[in-house]
Image 1 (cartoon, rainbow, N blue to C red):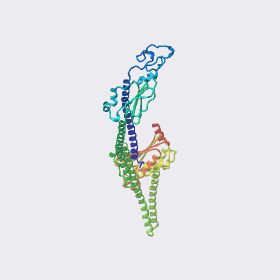
Image 2 (image 1 turned 180 degrees about the horizontal axis):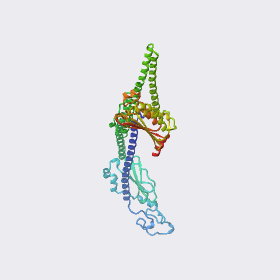
Image 3 (image 1 turned 90 degrees about the vertical axis):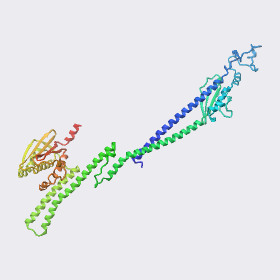
Image 4 (image 1 turned 60 degrees about the horizontal axis):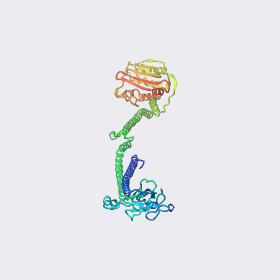
Length: 520
């Protein structure tokens, strides 16, 4: 299942969706929680600072020598060695310049929370301000850590760290104890004021938000996966169509084609390429079937001749002349069959890329003259004039195979020429190539037959070709030999005017590849 492209796309889509939703949900939750707690902390800090400000009854206590209303006393009486003057409660004050802890303790006990401020935490305003469970509370500690006042005596509130009167005022401190959020702000005279409230409601809302984010993320993921599934199904549908069409194609059914209208973008290009490949395969199979049928037909004719004449000769006693005629007929038929088999063998080797080509230096002009000499009797028999326009050209190749090509072209030019016509053979050198041309003044080739001219067993004039013993393989063999040498063979033809074949051969091996490298 996981080897399927569709499932792989779906899996990656699901992982990407889950990753995006987790990042988005976590970021949203953290930012909302942080913003909500910032609001709660600002609210508590405002209440704490207000409470600390309203606790100030006046200036802090001063030493006895400061002439303040709390330290003013009558001039000391008696012996100066009796020590510092006593306080009103009978105790003695400390030396000048020292902090009087006992007097500070008495001063701290005088701090009270105004009634108007108590209503903010304990009165109707507090009930209206929030729900009962979220009602704010406060606690005030003296500098020695003793609890001075609390709005909820039953609430166990741990005291903060103690401060000394001379220490600088610290920054507000925030802390959380379970469902309680608290802030501690510095009060007057080293006292500390705590204001807090329950955040159970906010935590419940955050839990609800978490659930909503989870449900929303699951819904979005489900919708995204469903959309991805449908999209991947639509994307894979052309591939399935291509697979189905390719599976339906076989040796007996090569006409199937992929519908290009149902495929788009890159798949459309792939479908076009596959259709072109199927067309080539169909054409190749058709050629193969036609080749097999034609080869069988061509081989059956000489075999039938051999069989019939042999049967006739063996049917009854014959004269020596009759036996000789039968043997000669069988010999001609076997010779034709051998030529056909040899031609088929050459084409089979060429198709397999195993056509043996020897490379040796030889005079191409001399080879052309030798071939012209061989076909001269045939030309004289049909009153065809042979004209030569040859330049000296040296070629590196297989002289036997090249001579086979030249002979075939000359034979065709004579056989398909009109009486008292002419055949002109030209040879010249153009750069690194040898150009051989064979032009006749024959009947020409019809346009509908020109595209099939190099196909195997194809004959322009089938009746005439059979009379002359042609098999329809000559030009196919010529093209295979020329291409094996790295050359090319082309032709031009006009009906009732003649045909010209042009052979282009590299004068030495590798010329074609070197020319392509120079062009690049």
